[in-house]
Length: 199
Image (tube, rainbow, N blue to C red):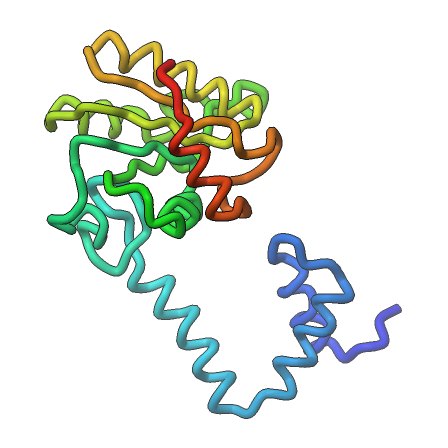
């Protein structure tokens, strides 16, 4: 039996759908939202609606952006001959915090995972190969997470890209096995970039 009114219960359930939000945190967030004034509530709702409406995938790298191409792909200061391949959009933000990488990115939007029924055709590998065939690429840096799926994806990419005569490197494992780029500190990421090796 719930101690909350149906409206509050529904709000709590909505927060519980968010990743890493348990029941107690959902209750705190729900009551925090109820304490906000109407102007702050409207601004919060508007920011969610606008983000959902305005954000799109960059047609070059598949980053999420308000513009197409995204600011990284559009920047004349970036080296388009070096592509860092990541699993997720959040991994770009992690890499950018190092202020070390001057190339561009390609977001796979996942990893190869036969156990979950995800094959190479289910992520943005074909799009990466199209990029490679249409541009002069010197190096592909594979920065997938150091888990089984990330390693399998890295090996697969290496096998199909190296025969094209392109240098393929993997970021070094300064990042703990089982860790995510998104939560890795800048120094560790910087060292991982510096210590990358050819596959």
